[in-house]
Image 1 (tube, rainbow, N blue to C red):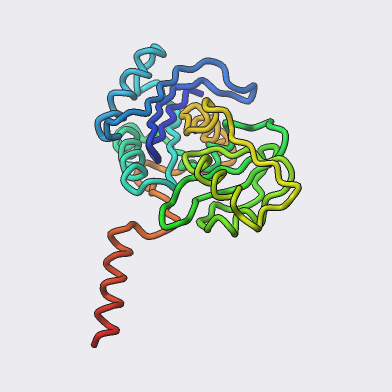
Image 2 (image 1 turned 180 degrees about the vertical axis):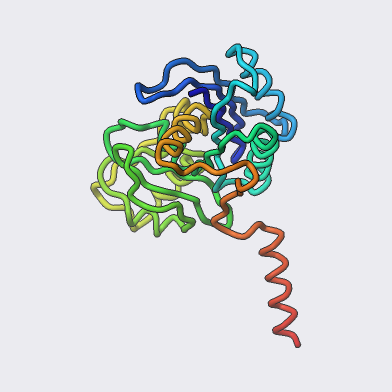
Length: 240
């Protein structure tokens, strides 16, 4: 099966075309950038380039996989909207992949626990824990102390929140003495659309795909604008 994978949930953007079957990853083309351009500028040109480089066109794609969240609210919307538009006219099935699960895929087979972490601001991280490709937690949003208390043994940290979490965890009194926190190598630390495609294939095999029309972003928190609106409304009600 030929799969188009996309990610725009954080600072980096990534697009991949990959041939995947039950024997694993066969052939692929992948582009990733981490620059000052916005994803609305980057993503569609990257899709065109990755298809041309592979030697395929959109009509050859059998599945579209996209990191549907958590992540930057704007970035998540751009990625999901792009896939909705590309898949709708051709009725191509879509896999709404967890950003955190695709990050953990970068380190599948690593010795120890993998902690996928994204900076959620407001002193929180989006995170999930994995070991040997198996989930240990759901996708969550918590502060450093809560997450640190769950870590033991060797733990590989990946995601755009990895370095910040490593710094904060080192100052935490909740860090266990046996916890060995290690930053993943740079090539495995950021989102990678090839991992998104691999996760998407697993979802397709499990019957967890959706139509382009039904594809939706997955948020763990309300968008900032909505939070601010609710806070203003609460303050107004208190003053009445």
